Amino acid sequence: MTHKQFVQRVQWVGHFDSEGLAERAVRAVLETLARRLTAEEAGRLWHSLPAGLELSVRHEKEHEIFSLDEFLDMVAEHEGATYPAAEHHAEAVLGVLQENLSSRELGEMVSHLPADYADFFKRSRELALSSK
Image 1 (spheres, rainbow, N blue to C red):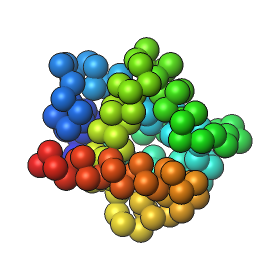
Image 2 (image 1 turned 90 degrees about the vertical axis):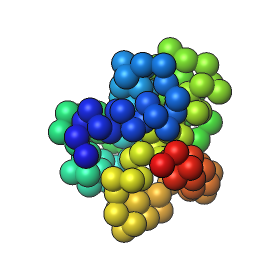
Image 3 (image 1 turned 90 degrees about the horizontal axis):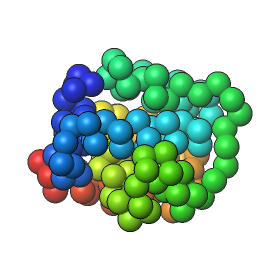
Image 4 (image 1 turned 30 degrees about the vertical axis):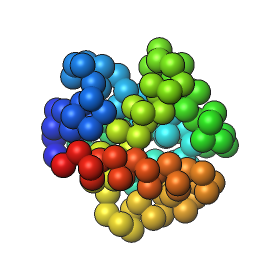
């Protein structure tokens, strides 16, 4: 999948009005997720992303620990959206992201996150699957 295809898929899944809005959501979600992952986890994710998106998950600082609610607050702030909009956007982005990860890669990433993230990833995957 190319960068453009990834963003267009997010646009479709998330019902964004434009590709530009979908791109902004993709960057906000991936950059915030990268802050939550260790450098090793972010590196594995980096290799699974289309060219042009991998820089969104480059994170060289110590990973941060924050809850799912805090994650969504940060996405909302980064994207300039409301919390409910950011939640829906994150579901769309993470759903499409999961289409690009192997089961092993996804399992490894989610295993390092609190349980509420696992539930959110599951909902995200279901959203993407329902949009095929």
